[in-house]
Image 1 (tube, rainbow over the protein chains, first blue to last red):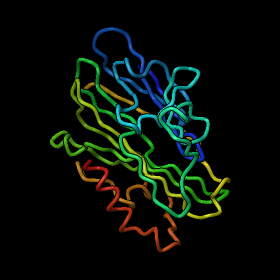
Image 2: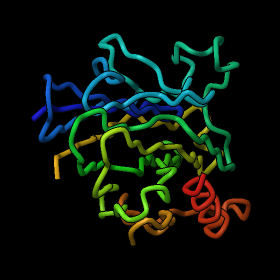
Image 3: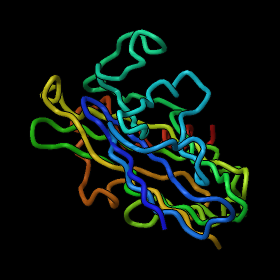
Length: 193
Length: 41
């Protein structure tokens, strides 16, 4: 069993993730990453966790540890080369960013994938919330996508299939400006079914 | 429910809190619509 971690970073959010695994089929992967920080060579692992090829994939940054992280702050290394300079979420607005990252089964077996949590909150210095939203999930019809109390489970993700994620940011009050942020982790696990 | 978009209530349950939208510009129905739109994209 391998572990991975996504890091959600603040002023916004960040997510990251990746998996490592040896050669051949894998029976399970459990990953935890900081959102705004880490993972190693996620894109090429059995469980690929990587930015999409869309422009919003630039919100996924690589940490010093080669981990992936969603970073909507000024510290994102893609600011200036893919991101024009945005440094956070708008107050009193819904910020939608689709096609940020994807989880792809790059192994040889069908796996059940769980990602948790999908909701990130900071309420101490002004309410802000970041929601990770599964996309292209209707394409998985017949495989089953469930929302347990702490995240999402894709019952069967076949080799070569992927599920994309976008995010929705909700700074819930103007008091959140320059004060509220999120730095958290998204845990991703996969197990052969 | 399988293969249905998550709702605001789903996220509230995940987070263990009720979102307080406060401002009229951020309402529950609008957010549910945005979640469904992104889910289908």
